[in-house]
Length: 169
Image (cartoon, rainbow, N blue to C red; front, side, top):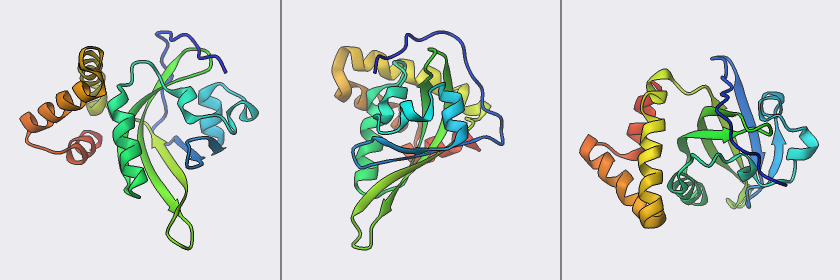
């Protein structure tokens, strides 16, 4: 599936909107609720069994997804701010909560993501932060972006989880 060209058109979630999706262990979409399908601009048949990364906006630093995958592979919950791209090239920001679903033996069965509107406080910080991380990524790869994020968190005297959650309050 060809990736859309990004536009400057933003779609905004309402405060009572929840986007829900489920993926297999490789990140392929198994389920998306009506809100997910509608905002993405894709038909349900176009989304199912596709990699969730078809919604990845080029403004997203790779370090955020590296961190996300590392956490969920360890069966740990993670929160993240994500800018997604729609089929028509427009975009939307979300505050995502991603968790693992385990089978009866404790093995990862799939991943479940619930996303809601990102707070105004987060939107005053995250886009600029992600630009910094992308600049570090261009010059130093994902490792450069990771070092930049770690430096920023150290300067703020916090860790990733505390920082992300503090922006949504």
